[in-house]
Image (cartoon, rainbow, N blue to C red; front, side, top):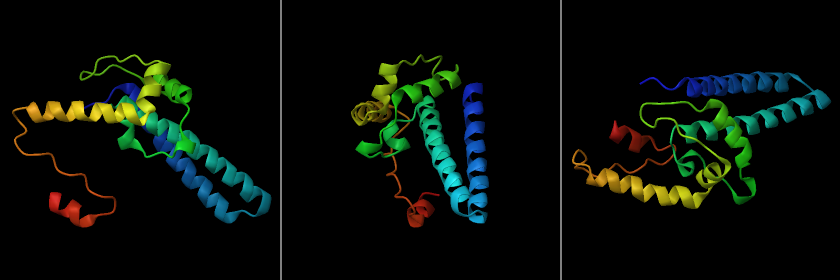
Length: 152
């Protein structure tokens, strides 16, 4: 399945952020004092920028925010920044058509209650589907190899 061009561009940017982060990390290990401090600040800024893009990428793909990340109350994202990224990379797809986003919609996507409210609706449609006769598999815990091996 081919992704819309906007998502492909966003994905390429995310890969570039990863490469840049690795480059900064290697320079940090070779640096000292003030230079090292400046590089750490660059890496922190890059991490924040990358997080915004990752969340926007997930939301554009239709993934609920709860599945993208678990965020502390004191570390919430700025919906305006996420909206700007989403508008720059939004595109048309066969499955969803062209979805328009505004600040209110992005804010609701980033709140925990909206994603929890959407979850039962999506599971109820799956249960009524004639194709799904068996219950969906339980999500595996992070780092649990045994559960992953059983499902494969």
